[in-house]
Length: 299
Image 1: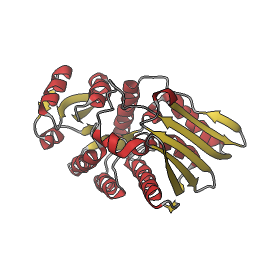
Image 2: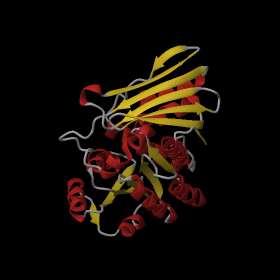
Image 3: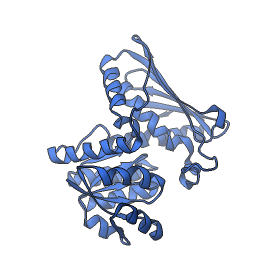
């Protein structure tokens, strides 16, 4: 059993990560730290754990940290926890730059730690099985991904997030799309990007094996125009990726179990570890450059 500390006190921390940590047989939920002490106290009380005023004190008391914080804050604290020898269960995106992502990867590798980045879809059992089958089948010419969310509506728990307002769909839902496409089509070598109305971003990606993929991403789509779809096409025809069959808290529980299993087995590398998280950040960073310069960017 891994002793876990939770860093973060927002909706995602409370309803997904905290709920999963409190009920998982492989986790001992030790305590909570947050930038708002009052929220940390409330969340700790809810789950019957300790609220920590000092993040380093919490890191010292656990084996692993689960992080539910903005990516720029997460990257710094993840590197700090890894330098202290703690395993990592992180949110996506890993960081907002490859420089910051590299610091986390370096610390994890030097200390031989297990790590996971919680790309939600990768921890739904039925989606994982679908992707494994699609990757084994091969002969895909490309994919298209549409992720049009509309979070800036009254009552939406994510709409007040400053980093989401600033970085938009590219950095928030983009990692989800890439986590589906990359396992099947492989690494990306070139990125082109174009902006569209309502903070929408269109990406065109070339993959190392020759396939291409097209992504349409937004957090600010018209409420009547939200859409979520992933389609692969090629010699086998067209196939649509299924929706996950469990709750997000159950998916996070699967991630806890996978991290714990990796620690027990002494196998720190994982298909969704910080190395993969860094690969995703590199693509998003290249997309930012492509948008700014109206150019195709090589990775």
